Image 1 (cartoon, rainbow, N blue to C red):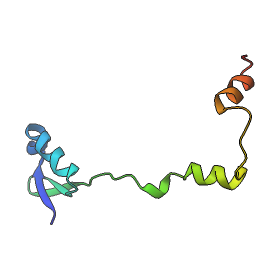
Image 2 (cartoon, rainbow, N blue to C red):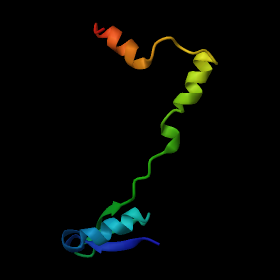
Image 3 (cartoon, rainbow, N blue to C red):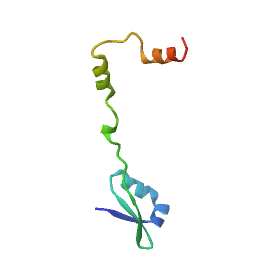
Image 4 (tube, rainbow, N blue to C red):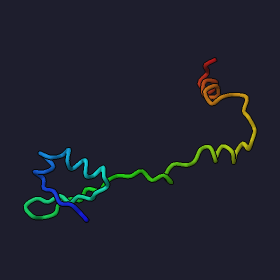
Length: 80
């Protein structure tokens, strides 16, 4: 069920509205009885980020590298 809030509610009761958004509720924002916006909670898409451990195993298999990533970056930057 979509909850409703007014622009005035946003101004004076934003903490309550934010808490409702964090719970996953969708909120319609009204001004003078007309809907002007819809607020939806943002949820990160877990598939948006690659699984770097799986990618590393696919590329290197069970091999162990001699240098750490920090050493590789430092060497590329010309630092010892």
